[in-house]
Length: 404
Image (cartoon, rainbow, N blue to C red; front, side, top):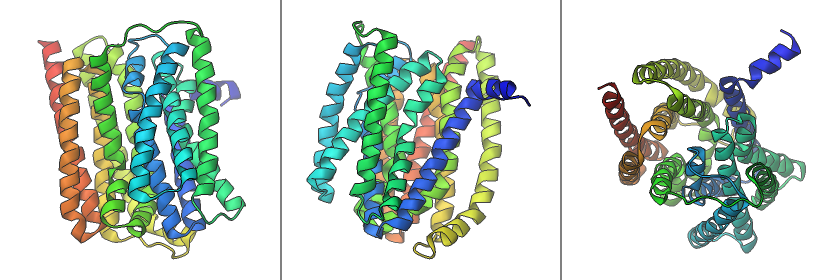
């Protein structure tokens, strides 16, 4: 195949999406393994916790504006980005105060956490803008920059033989800040630096925020609950297991969701949407089965060889992580479908049910914590099951109405 033909293939949305998420997933795995090997157990647990908090907070920080932009309901402008920065600062302050009170982080870490959340939220909104414009290369760069920033931080930690989480987290924050500035300039120039944004539909923004935030909170809930219910040492073990097992399922979840949403919106009929969904589900199921088989044997080997016995992978925890991963893929398809097809009212209902799912996950994880990490993972998986069931119901009802 010629270089030109190869570039044309890579430029296709589906291939480009898979490639971008694959590279970011590989960067995430490598970063976590390097940090787990370099840092003391408690310090590795701390940076895992900080990354989880950043991931949740930067989704909450735009207050749903990223979803409104991605659905092409409002124009991009510097004025809109300033509004996002203001809301991001408020959310970041709340997240920093919570982390300080719960985990006694240092003032330097607090400042870095605030900056990282604000920069990540700007990149998230700009990623949504370029996704709506079908500029997938730019969108994916801003969307997955956090994984590469973490990888750069892990390389820095190894290079200077760091023994504290502050070093890689500072480098990660600096990289995220550079990406946030680049995203602002890129979007402002394309949207018009002096342009004014139109009125934001608060109901649409709130509904999208509820759906998106509940999904990301569920994604990080295992780590957050492990830290609270079992302690940092158990969180470190969970971080290692999820670093190896999680990314393949996360890759499939995000790839399916990212590519499926605009394709469902563009489909010309209900029958075409049903065919598209059935094909995506069949392909995802086949990949999940293969991934589970490979990860069952590969995960203990990778951890043993790379970390030299510093961590072990309990069989019950590995099985729970695989079950949870499969449910997360189902949730990715469900989220993309409901974001593409549901109206504002249905999105609000799904968002409400998703929060009920989080309540179920917390209660089930708390009840299961007495058996260890696997109990927490299964508990959170119950929350994913609630979310998937609700989304499937509303999407199915919407498709039936379209065919009637």
